[in-house]
Length: 212
Image (cartoon, rainbow, N blue to C red; front, top):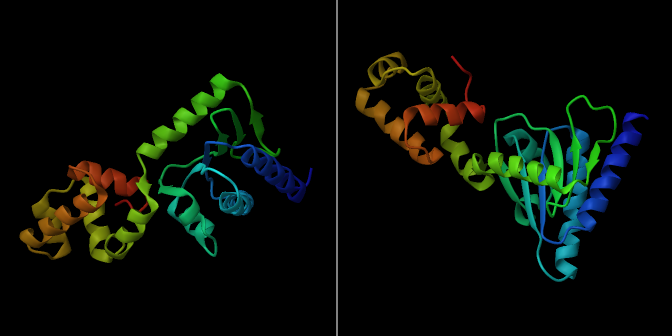
């Protein structure tokens, strides 16, 4: 089967699953362009369905910052779905109502595996929610972008991850110890973590800086 035919088949399966959703749709993104296109289509279908039909379906989409940025471009994804950012690599999956799932493993040359075994689907949903709980809401990520992607913040984050002492890190960056600690406090508050190690680890997972 050609790549185009596989993409069409995957898109058709996603559309069918989402059409039968009544409560929840959980989507993890690999960043593959074909998956992003298919997910953008099903989110558009859900938006139309929400406007014209009764009830609201909870839609959660988890992916890297770049994948979510591409998904959101020119679409209403951020308004329809809850989006969260993770730096962990994800296999493609869509779980419907904890009843059915479509899973596409990296390197899989087929259209993905349709899972209907309830126990297996519950495991997939549980894995998704574990990654979801450890991730950052998309809107928070956007708010952080302006500061945490500055050169100074990225340098501080790299030193937090490396375990440098405040005095050494401040000297390397040409900052006073007081100013460096102000940057650290702002970073930890922005990331919602309570320790320097957690701040560096969270930022590394989200690929906010180049590891020293």
